[in-house]
Length: 314
Image (cartoon, rainbow, N blue to C red; front, side, top):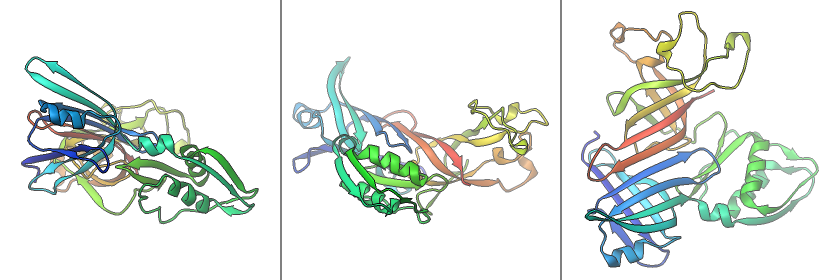
């Protein structure tokens, strides 16, 4: 049950004194996606005393944000990162400290490698060596990675993220850093088998919006660049669209992150968008992978919300 919101913020430098904030007001806005670029968190912390601000307001501090519901799974980590900028302003009666935080920015920026392999080297072997160079935890690799070889060998000198990009593209994979862990996915599957189910009964808000290509007729094999969002209510009777996914909004769901396995229950999943919801007692369910996820909230006012884009599994 999504009641009794709880949140906790920890800020501090490695091996030094950290600040844990539970009772002061703070607000957060998180953007995450399934891409190599760093995920970001914007924080506003209200009315810290001078001593606490002197610890919190430092570039390169580590930040851990936990949020959730007391009667669900409690406060769980929804963002981990490093402070890239910090400043404080007085606005009316409030002293507000602003933190801009990025996930994985230090290993992405600082990791450089020099590698050389003989002809016929396994691309997965190279991938794992490059992944290890970031010196951060690595989530389980996809179960069904299809290996290839570098016929002429493989050599690289430079930033590790560039090598990761090229190797993953060669193997048909994607990679990102999620909460200071390296995550590698194939392009068609979620990270694991743990399922997050979204329904109107557990926080799904409004009607999922279909992301479609209005100019593609799948049955005729025609393709074109996606035109973006089109709600299914606007379909004509005989129109045929290729569904690219759904945009959904829900009460804050800390289990959602890019790459996770999602079950969506909604009457909008029916082929007939004009279907009366009373036609059946069972809502249809379909399965997706989360591609982008945003979390936003304030510990003293307003709703805690999550929005995400879901990609159909193939």
